[in-house]
Image (cartoon, rainbow, N blue to C red; front, side, top):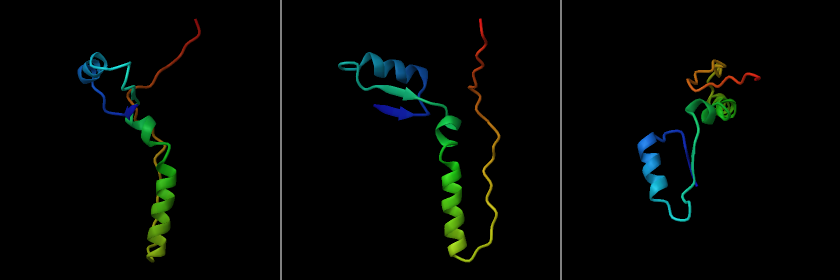
Length: 76
């Protein structure tokens, strides 16, 4: 399995054409979707390290969704 946020159409198509027994499996997620989940934990870890070093900083994780690949589902 290859999990990334950087697949492009033609390289992905070529990888699928060259696949043996349907492998490798390709999973492509958007950058925002793959990164926002761990940002609060990273901010906390960074804050702990800086605090241990005597730095008094405020760290905030933006809540702005910058993903251009949003989907809207409508009933119908």
